[in-house]
Image (cartoon, rainbow, N blue to C red; front, side, top):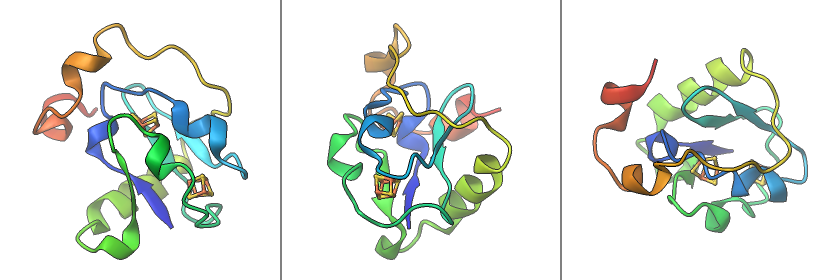
Amino acid sequence: TYVVTDACIKCKYTDCVEVCPVDCFYEGENMLVINPSECIDCGVCEPECPAEAILPDTEGGLETWLELNTKYSAEWPNITEKKDPPADADEHKGEEGKFDKYFS
Ligand code: SF4
Ligand code: F3S
């Protein structure tokens, strides 16, 4: 599966949802997650994300994000249409430590 990592937090560009053939993105207040049991591993979302927030879990070291994607995709609503990112999205692109600072 592919997973959304903390690079998405406060960026939420949502380019990813437009290209997913199985509509498996779910939206929280500050970030999106993928439902790992729905993702078909097509990989088309990875290059679409301007924040480079999406990675294949085969990269290793992504267990924390896999768990987070699994947990929250069961709780948050599905998102299938692109929408405007937050006004300050570009300021948070590439910022370190976003999970501890902003995730709630
Ligand atoms: Fe959707 Fe493909 Fe990305 Fe999985 S890898 S979330 S199926 S676009
Ligand atoms: Fe997040 Fe990138 Fe999608 S910033 S909303 S994973 S395009």
